[in-house]
Length: 101
Image (tube, rainbow, N blue to C red; front, side, top):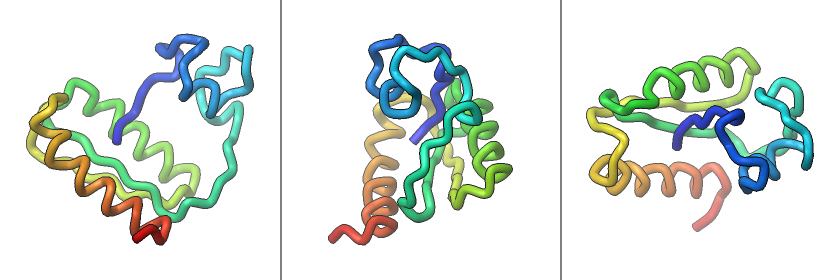
């Protein structure tokens, strides 16, 4: 549901361990491709979110890579009020992509 600069993640972070080879200090996904077919990916961001530009850049990057991706922006910030609404939509979207009932 958002973009996180990988260089900001601690070496022991689960996301870093999943996306990158252990012990390597890669800072972008082009250096290490993770190949998994999960259908169209989706993300959204609040128009007042402090990470709005990073989310836009990530969506553009996925488009450049040819990764099926749907990106939406809605009013709101980087807070629980936004997530409480949109996490439900994200769960339903990804359940549909993964054919989960």
